[in-house]
Image 1 (cartoon, rainbow, N blue to C red):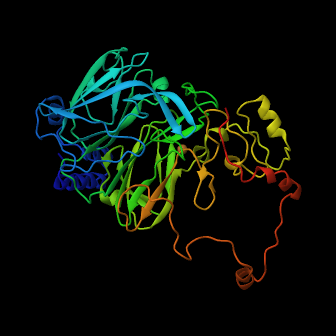
Image 2: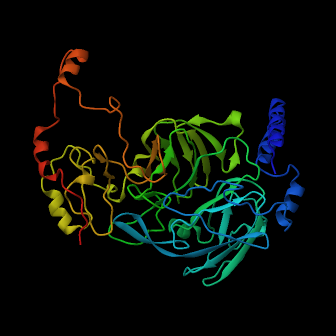
Image 3: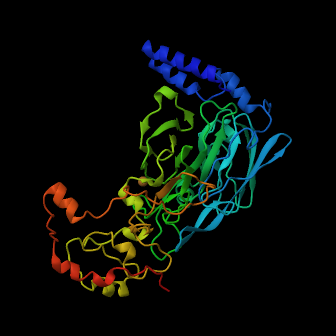
Length: 473
Ligand SMILES: [Cu+2]
């Protein structure tokens, strides 16, 4: 167990080693942070013995449970002092956002699997039942376990064959934000969704307590328009980007009260891509990297954190800025929905009725608008069966041209519950608005002349505006 005092003594050793130029020592010093013992042999005995140092940690008493938006926490029961969990790997008919469903592989009826939550020092026993048509195994990503519990099929254990239930058992000798995922036929099983978050709370918390503790797992999928099975061999062209298995507008907002300390634990098990996650309205501190606590003096400040495939990053900030704040991957293709991909480039072109004619021949065909793609989400063309428009959803002020790996952090004063409070009411004078002629004359000395790029283009668009997106068939 890492006490605050030991934590600081480690930090001092690390600093001292670094000062002497012993860089390898400093790396070793860093590794001891978050682990219960500086003595590797003792640590190993501890991890492999059934010896119990602490009673099972209890929610509300030993920790404040995390919130998994659009997801849930895996229930457990205590048997003889051991926390017993049961994961069932199975096919799930999963909704990514209203209008788009696909047959994925997940756990306990969910994509991704429920969040496993426990406390440092807990002895956990996790049963894994395989109801998939092929063998599997589960790896506890970042969790320090005995080699035979590490879940790499063939290397650490036998495959769990269809219909079999395996038992994993280990003691949690660290705390932090970790993950679990299939480690058998990885490319297929991860592309189909077989992953979840694994949160281990500290036995003896140090530092300020989070009022809101969110868990967000990133992933990416290719689901061809009109189909209902993600393409598991995709390597580059992903068209459905998700937080906790959902694409905006299917993502639930993260709600906080003004003044709350908000923690967000990001994990990324996308098949191929890293995600720079950006939050508007705040700066945060990166408090954990791959589950390991970052010493306070070394916590980076920022508003974007790169979460590479296989990494977790935990951030904390004070919700001191009321409003509706975008939080999203900053790769522009990752905030776009399914139909935004592979659209022919028609910027500056007059397509006339081409779209309508071609779409009769090619289901799912949709060209880019003449003046960009912002109109596509709200234009009148019917959406093919089982698909989501390329862009987002109606917002308070206008259509939101964002989708995919996008969600909203909602901070409010005077909240009575953490239910979705609806759209933010902007206080007078705090909303961007159309400039008046008086203001323009006063400040610019003139009224800027409107110079449309091509007046002819505008004529083709009239009948596309203000029509609702609807699903065909
Ligand atoms: Cu991304």
